[in-house]
Image (spheres, rainbow, N blue to C red):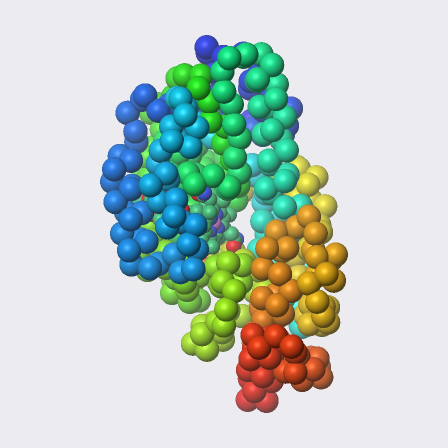
Length: 359
Ligand code: B12
Ligand code: SF4
Ligand code: SF4
C-alpha cells in the first residue's frame, strides 16, 4: 500500500516515481506562498522561549540557528518550496530483554540515516537538476537549521504529537524526515489535512511513561532530561538524580513512541539500510566497556549513528546501564574503568560499582 501519494503538477511528473524508486513513499509539499498551517511567528516565539528557558541544554547549534528555523528562503535563497520526505524505519524487536546488555533506540539499529536517506535525496536532486536547468535544488537530512517537523506539518505529512514528534497516518511517528528545498513553486499538498488534532483528548501516555519527566507539558520537551539527549548529545557527567532512571538505554530512547496509541499504524520498514543491523538492538555491555580508545570505537561503530557520542561518552552510558541492570559479573571491568585515563569514565564506573553493591 502506498501511504501517501502526491502529484506534482508544474514539475517533472515523474517526481513521484523518482521518490518511489528510492523507497520513499511518504512525502508532501510545504509551499511557502500558501498560508502556513501554524504561523511561523508563533512557532518562532515557542522556539525562542524554549531556548530562553535553557531546555536545549548544551545543543548550542539550536541557539545559533534559531533565526533560520522557519526561514527556508534564508537557508536557500529564492526557495519557494520545501518538499518534505518521511522515511520509515520501524522494526519489531527480535531480541528479548537480556541481562548485561544495553538497549539501542530503533532508529540506530542499522545504517546511519543521514547517509541512508541523504544518498536517496541526493540522487533525486541530481535528476531534478538535469530536468530543470536554471532551478535550484538542495537536500537536507537533519543537518539544516530548519525545524523539520514544522515543515512536515505544513506539507500535510502529519501533525505534532504531545511527545513533540510528527505522527503520520502511514507510519505513526517511526520515520525520519528529510527535505529538498527548491526555487520551483509547487502547489501545497496539505489541503484539508488535520493540523495537530490527532492526539486523543485525554491521552498523555507518552508523558506518563517517560522515566525522567522530560515531557514537561503537551508539545514541550526538556531536552536536558531526555535519555536521548543524555546518551547522544550530552558529553559531560550525567546527574546522579537521572542515572538510575535511565535503565538499560545506552543510545537514544523509544519509550514515548512505544506507548503511543497512534503508533498502531507502524509497519516494518522494507529498506535494507535499516533492516541489516550494524549496531543492533542490544549490545553486550562487556563489549562496550572493553573498548579502550576512540580508534577501536570508530572501527566498531563506523557508519552507524552510534559514532556520534564517541568512546568516552559511550563508556559513561554503558557504566550507567551496568549499574542499573545489576550485572555483577561486570564488576571487574568497572573496576578497571574506575582507573580509566578519562575522569568522566572513572566517575561513572565508580558510581556503577557503588550501585551494584547497593542492589
Ligand atoms: C534537537 C533534536 C533533538 C533533541 C530535542 C528533541 C525535541 N523534541 O526538540 C533530542 C536530543 C532530545 C532529540 C531526541 C529525539 N529525536 Co531528535 N531532533 C532534534 C533536531 C535536530 C532539532 C529539533 C528542534 O529544533 N527542537 C527544538 C524545538 C523547540 O523545535 P521544533 O520542533 O521546531 O519546535 C516545535 C515544538 O516546540 C512545537 N510546539 C510547541 N508548542 C506547541 C504547541 C502545539 C499545539 C503544537 C502543535 C506544537 C507545539 O512547535 C515548534 C515549532 O514547530 C531535529 C531535526 C530538525 N532539524 O528539526 C531532530 C528530530 C526531531 N529528531 C528525531 C528523532 C527520531 C528523535 C528521537 C525519536 C530519537 C530517539 N529514539 O532517541 C528522540 C525523540 C525524543 C522526543 N520525544 O522528542 C526526528 C523526528 C522525526 C519525527 N517523526 O518527528 C527528527 C526530525 C530528525 C529527523 N531528521 O528525522 N532530538
Ligand atoms: S525519548 Fe525517552 S526520555 Fe526522551 S521524552 Fe521520550 S520517553 Fe522521555
Ligand atoms: S501517547 Fe497520546 S498524547 Fe502522546 S503523542 Fe501519542 S497520542 Fe499523543
